[in-house]
Amino acid sequence: MKRVLTIKAKAGQVTAKDVYTDNGQLVIKQGTVLDKEIIDRLKYYAIFDFFIKDEDLVSYEQDDLERMIFAEQREENPEEDDAYYNRLHQTKRFKEFENMFHESVQKVQAYINDIVLKNCPINVDEMLNDVRKITSEFQPNVSVFDMIHCIEGYDDMTYVHSVNVALISRIIAMWMNLSKEDVDAITLGGLLHDIGKVMIPNEIITKPARLTVTEYAIVQTHPIHGFNILRNQRIDERVKQCALQHHERCDGKGYPYNKTYKEIEPLARIVSIADVYDAMTSNRVYRAGMCPFDVIELFEGNIDAYDPEVLLTVLEKIANSYINNKVVLSDDTEGKIIMINKNKLSRPVVRVGLDYIDLSKLKDIKIVSLK
Ligand SMILES: [Fe+2]
Image 1 (cartoon, helix red, strand yellow):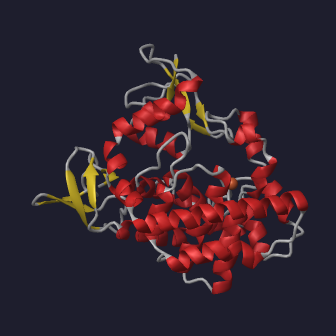
Image 2 (tube, rainbow, N blue to C red):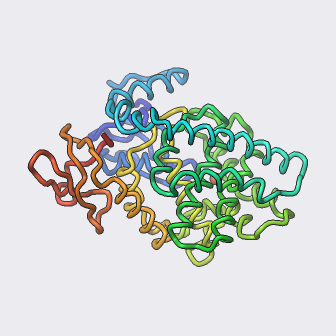
Image 3 (tube, protein in one colour):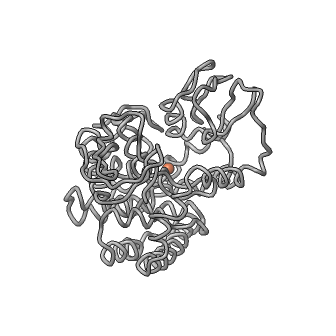
């Protein structure tokens, strides 16, 4: 029996133990033969590593984890390193975005410290200023999502994530044609959604490996801590609900209260999508962000967990934004996205040479990266 990283897992390997999420939900049982769908499910549930029945696998030292994962990501996705995101990273527009972004992260960190440590009243306009500025200077569309993907996490990741979720939530709220007041409320909800994490020990938040059941139970208290920190602040009550409910899921499988669609504050339902989207696409210390079409596929496979109207709008916007984009397919060919399939947004029609390949009809080939 050996431990294997989920990103190194291969079809055909057999699990040696039941695999649980960090909150104790069973993902796959002992003795399951892995296939692509099951490996994707493990990635979706953020299973970092697990045990397989394979004596040939090399075990690893904890200290080597980051280096190994980076090496593996480069090996598996060399295109991702030098193609689409790399080009975007070099643009003047991205540099401007990056400067504004880091300035905003530092301010948010200072505001949150004031709120938590000194119980300072929240100055809403001051807090929203930078995110408002970013969405007015940069078109509020998917290109902002792509720039977020390119940000390197040299600031404290909790605050980077807070600004990301605020930006993504704000853009989604604009797409949903919400009122200006609601757009601002959700932006503040995004900035403050994880404020409760300041109450979680730092060694748990920054642990580069999978958390134990006890550690995850501690992490799962952050929505309640967040609500308690914000409880007496004179801000829109819905912002407090974003902190409390952003891990609730419409199918009742979230936490802390297993609420369902109707019981979850609509703005919190949007923040939850932005939160998961950012967790999957952003570059983290221990892994590179996923290709947007993989992200769409994972959302499509878990559609009951989210507000369907919001999710469909978001996934359609993302998929449509890559029409005419060059992509690399899993059979190593390169093509260009020609048309989006409304019923299967993760699998568009791609032109390869003179052929038109409808990926919704070819289950064995998929987009692996943007070119
Ligand atoms: Fe959270």
